[in-house]
Length: 496
Image 1 (tube, rainbow, N blue to C red):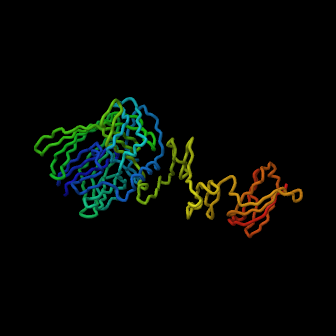
Image 2: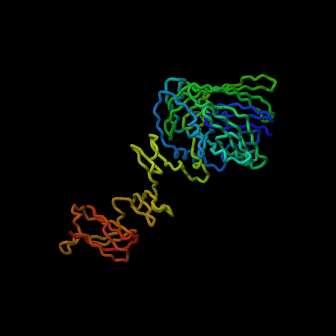
Image 3: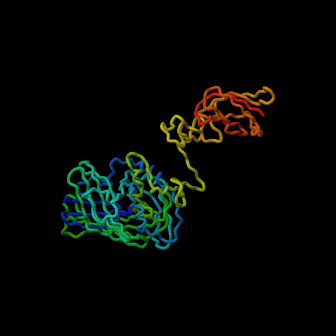
């Protein structure tokens, strides 16, 4: 067996697991940090050099999609702390979701991180430009256990994540992590590697509990990690980490909303030694802070300095849940809510049973795509709606044959009209032309007696026939019979 170090994404996205192995001896421990702010690389004894997603979108696209997919959520300030329970974990780990983690910056960020307080709710807010702190992202897709390759499965798993990596020769590796989500515990069962070259590996580690459910205020989680040096294969470094869930309240995530959350404080002591016969000696101590929501958000950062509740932070990481389809290289966005419809609102209400999309707001509207006439879709679907910004701006829909304007009036055709005194009954006459089966002719001035007017039409070109479909104070609408779409010319007169 190859010697390796595995960095595994935890199911709740609250922390990572570090698992070490040598020959047939395996030792496992939970790491509550963010892998020390590394750049996403995973040595695995030199076999796996990169943990990044292959054929992924660039970071700017992912940031745009992050804003696209999120409904703005507004949480009320709670008076008691939330708990992250099994239902929350299962909702995050649904097949078709992906965990997306943003990393890669040494820039400093200033933020009010609050203080330890188990009884009084607090409010926190990320900087408005916090996404600009990140330089890359990693992606972990949730699959059903049956989706894993035959021969690489691990028994007892209720959930599987798949990520893509590269070996030292830039060959693709499919990485499968297996989990069991129980009522009171979440266990990691092992990791499999589906290699493009070399022999596939399955590492079925002894099951171990790395999280208690529910995750709640007052929890204290201790972990000890002993890491093997990839060159000497000796245990020369040890990390002792304590996570204390010590505060609660709400956190504002720009572009996504405000969420009830828990705060955790980390203390990590790093010990080293020159050889395995020597005792470990404390090398450094690091303090970090994390924020956790029931919806699967996780914000983590190292604390550089702190004054009161204001902290200077570095090695910032942000994790969230996104639909896997949004992250595909094709760029297509597919939302599937098990045929129950999709709701967009600020009160978390369910969609109406008759609607595939239910949008509601007390003070906002829907912005329809705004395009020029020249950029109308080449092969529009019947019923497609756009807002045209030029050449008679307005809302247009495609009726299966042509584009029609949605308005109190249809597009006005080219009309030559004049006032006349031919006899005493004709008050106006002129010539007109249909535009794809309809047109609207305006009076010279509004008329209150429009309902009493008689309108005569004389065809000058062949079509299905014409009729007056509507009369208003401003004029009258003419349409072609049988839903015709011709551009036939005609003459008209109006009598009182």
